[in-house]
Amino acid sequence: MGRIPNDRLRIAQSPPEMHSTQPAPPRSSTSPSPTHSQSFSNTYIQRSRPYLTDQQIEERSRKDSQTEAKEITARLNACAWIMQVGHALQFPIRTMATAMILYHRSRLFSRNPYSEQQYVDVAAAALFVACKIEDTLKKSREILATSYNMRHPQLEPINSDSSILDDTVKRIIGIERVILESSSFDFRYRHAQPFLIKFAKKLGCSKALTQLAWDISVDVYKTLSPLKATPHVLALASLDLAMRLEDRRVEIEYERFEASREVVLSVIDDLLELYTSHRVQTIVGLNYDSNVYLTQRIQLNKERTPYTNGHISQNGTSSNSTSSHNNNNNHYIHPSRDFLNTSPAEPTPSTVVSIERGTHGTIRFMIDPTREKTEKEQMNGTGRSKEFTPPNGVVVSPWSGRS
Image 1 (tube, rainbow, N blue to C red):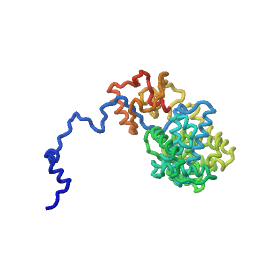
Image 2: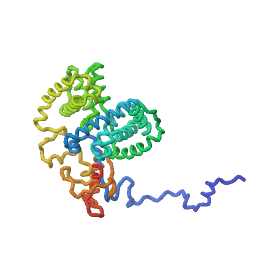
Image 3: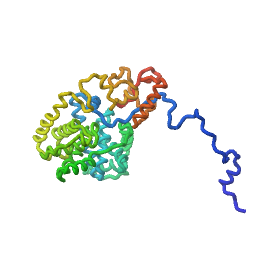
Image 4: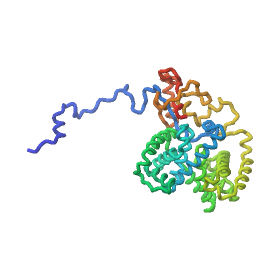
């Protein structure tokens, strides 16, 4: 007689109720649903807002000219680093473009003094995250090893297993979390290049003109325009500027492509400013004389006169309107004020203490605005105050530690 397998022996020796064939009792109506949060104590919601207005970006930017110049220089150097390493690793343009967007958002919403000085580490973390998002997987060590070999060509090349990279890899992992939080874990990225090819075919543009527009569409990611305009608007602006530089104007019906002429001209203005002041760090900048860009900027300012005279911002609201009117704009709310359910125009209390984000509560990242509205109504129904108070009695902003 053969031996009984251990699993059958355990079943045979177990009590009958443990392996009964009777159906499980129905779930109680009072039991919590796995998808419905029952307690919102110290819970804060941050919804993804992928596009900002000029005013919102200005509020997050540095005010003094000297610091602003350093910020622009660091941004352009970081974008140049991303492009160089990306080309060395043969990344597609979508990966490098996503990395530049992630870098812009991280620098806009994070004021860590270390990241301001060591832009290479932030750029490396942004490129590492972009590789994951765009399915061009590379280990962080491979990216850092490539960067090291490019920065130190006179030294012996290293590989991804070198101990020289150990400390840098640890820093990259820490910065990666900041980048993901600044993007609200929203990985829905689209880029201008696919739209550009379709628009060029629709308008009958030549191959040379399309190539110039393609290069401009890559340069546009070195500005903050991708944070303000959708990809098809970036494509139209790149194509429009290419026509202006080559003096081959084609009438573009922006409404037909569901685009606003005002926003397109704003993107072109950002590009011309880039080519005027930092042409060396661009692809197209050195192809034309600086006077060409100045002439185009003068002509562009004339075309933008109907919009600027009315003090109209990109989101269609008047720039000289009151703050209460601006509060009705639901395009974006500063993260700390969004968590606390306060008005965007309300100043930060003087008693705010800088703490590590998430210390006194749970932060939930959302994409769906409908779900955000529903859960905020439930949170307000629980009686949670607009500002939470830790045991020491001092009001704390969850974003104050990294704003």
